[in-house]
Length: 225
Ligand code: SAH
Ligand code: DHB
Ligand code: MG
Image (tube, rainbow, N blue to C red):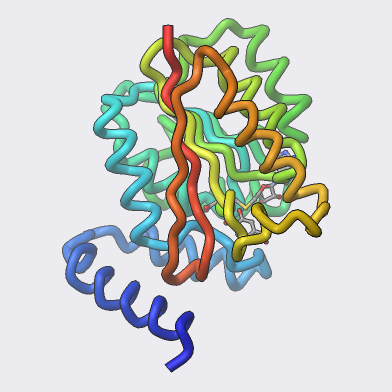
């Protein structure tokens, strides 16, 4: 059996054991409608979505920022962790993706708590900062990887002590550690990891992951005082 086939089978097994009681048709519907609308199948896996939800709950998150909405699948997992008066802002460049996401989020009953802002995140982030929002308890960075160091810097400005920053897709089949790979995406992720590793206000780590999303990983960073 190919290694990656095994990862997928084990992911199915774990999903069956651990997520079979998720009474949330809107998550499956979000994936179905994203697919029907031609969005790329690159949302976090169910087990990863649940990890994001648990992290938000451990944080006691009331304010969540997401960079990169796609069809709103990770958004719904994160949004479900919010208290009734909590709020999630998700930034998405592609108006078509945002439109699908807004429908998926509304069907999940999260439209009062979740706002999707359309535009390049590097335009939306300064606008958001100008509004002086309360510090975000969790920031999930999952957009164009070339801008990852900029997004980590913005996340630092928009958070406070104890906030958690999560960066998706930091391994990409091992490409991050291949010195011959100089793709802008890989360079952006390396620069973000260097920033996390060297910043006096960040305490970070990374996890390699296998499963339905093949071989990839997350970086996690806690904001210090
Ligand atoms: N978080 C989603 C997946 C996001 S995929 C999930 O797990 O369900 C990455 C998304 O980032 C895509 O929808 C893409 O359109 C968006 N994106 C790409 N460049 C962007 C930019 N500059 N600003 C905001 N969003 C961007
Ligand atoms: C890609 C982007 C993602 O955010 C992801 O989780 C997987 C793949 C991509 O651009 O290929
Ligand atoms: Mg991703």
